[in-house]
Figure 1: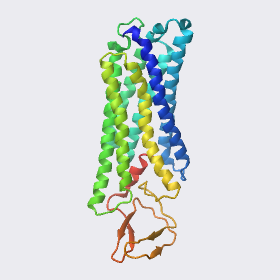
Figure 2: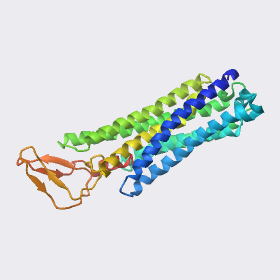
Figure 3: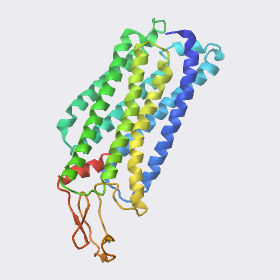
Figure 4: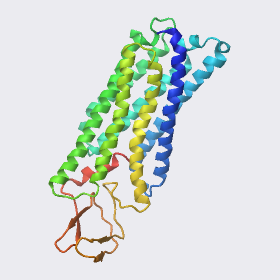
Length: 343
């Protein structure tokens, strides 16, 4: 650890983290506002709501700890005359709080990815066995990291890059990277499989575009977090002080990745609430519906109010220009679970 660089690195960390935290807060507020527009009170959204709350608290705690350390180093510790000594002391309670909040943010973010995987795969527990094992490993390594870093001797050579703490920190980065790659790949595979089955069955799906959009936002969101995890691992293994600003952004990156998916789902709810066609979700109800076609005639067919408990609505055009509504040829639970995964 290069002591002269501790102060500029931590100053840069405070500024960059504040920027990313602002993005995270914006997404969180947008998600909360869109969630309030929902008309249903389905309990299936509770896990995501709880996960969002935990992630918000952990990311906010980390940012607050960074600000507290900044003021203590330049205003309170030794009357602000020794900021380098303050940042070099790894036993400070504020650093322990920061390390713990990183651990909670990463753990909760990975837990929500596993939850999405479980829902998308129709509550298939066997698909989740591997990420559950890695999650348990992340928990153990996270506890070990917090304990080791908080008990490091301030005079230890290389400080946080010492071998005692290095094994735990490296394990944390690798485990969360593997978990996110595994979950994202299987969720993407599931979505592509459902799309392919419907296409083979000759079904014109109203929600195909939304599924494709969901797949894109899922992959992009996962790419943000996994890329930043790789950067953190590389910087740490190089024993560079750039780790401080890079690692301090990790909780916000996890929050942004998580909230981007939630906001995308929330935009689908908003479209339904303002009267747009309910095609943003694969599981919906139709009431007081009027179906019409203008391809061969201008006749309008009014239908009596009814409620359909279906997974997917498909529009077919008959020889007489009328539109028929039928089910998809694949398992209804597949599409329903896909819609629940982002709720």
